[in-house]
Amino acid sequence: MPAGNRSRPGTARRTQFNLGRALPFLILVLCVVADLITPDRERFDRLLVAAPALAAVTWSVRGTVGIGLLAMAARALLSRGDVGAAELLANEAVLAGVTAVAAWVSRVRTRYEQDLRELTAVAEVVQRVVLRPLPAHLGRFDLRLLYVAAAAKARIGGDFYEAVRVPGAVRIMLGDVQGKGLGAVETASVLLGSFRAAVVDAPDLAALADRLEEGLARYGAWDPDSDAAERFATVVLVELPDGRDVARLLSCGHPAPLVQRGSAVEPVHFADPSLPVNLAGLCDPRHRIEEVPFGPGDRMLLYTDGVSETRDRTGTFYPLELRLRGWAREPAKELPELLHKDLADYGADGLDDDVAALFVVFPPEAR
Figure (spheres, rainbow, N blue to C red):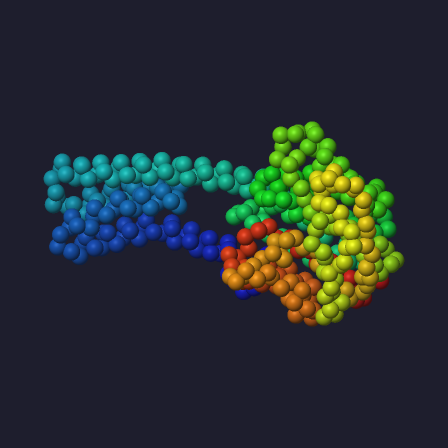
């Protein structure tokens, strides 16, 4: 998510990259000028070895070698017969050695960057497959999503979501896998696959919850050594039927969604929530579906505990309901960014957990 008026990350990276490429030449120029204007001409030309060393950080192998050759030429010109041939050759040999090592470092770096670009491309493809972008509009409703993975540089975490238009309704799932890392991503992908396979045919949310349980159980039986077989996930399922201004919800141990009507915000009350997915075998897997009013102008927030359990430096939990009341007049499209910035500012360590928050908006004009 873009953050207000902050400068774009790509612009900052390009600025740093250009400065890094210019730095070896700046070293060359400063060394030459300093050597020419000081009586002791051997004092500063020894620093020319820094030019190829710095070039290895941002330049290609060819560029690094070229800068090293420029440094060697500058060293030879600055000597002007002030040093003997043996000393000059020794100095040039040192520069040549530094240039060779810098070229090797540059080659290693460029290979690593290429591998990183390929891995990033693969991660983007995986993200599009596992966590597909949600449409801004689905049926009568607008969808506004905030998704942040806790792991540095990660695009996918243990939180997951999906929304699908089925005959007669819109069905939504949002969930949170226990733990973090690749095992959590694996479990999330299994549950998303089960949801997508069953969402159209399942007669109701209870049957859909059973399919999620069955899908994860089958995956665990197929690969018992998989980390996914040992994890559980909290899930909330929502069905928004056509022709009725209600929302049907089923919770498998997940935080209760919040429904906002004007400035009033209330959590959905689950009289008998189900156990998290992959724990249902501990008891009779009965599912109770709750139905609440949800009409034009209303908003519903589905969220994971990365939102509600963010704490400030005193250990106080994030006041989510209070914030939603204060944002009652804010345009729906601004809500994810407002929540993202506020969570990052509120948390003692910023955002240190996966965060998923989905605003389901029933526009006032929709019918």
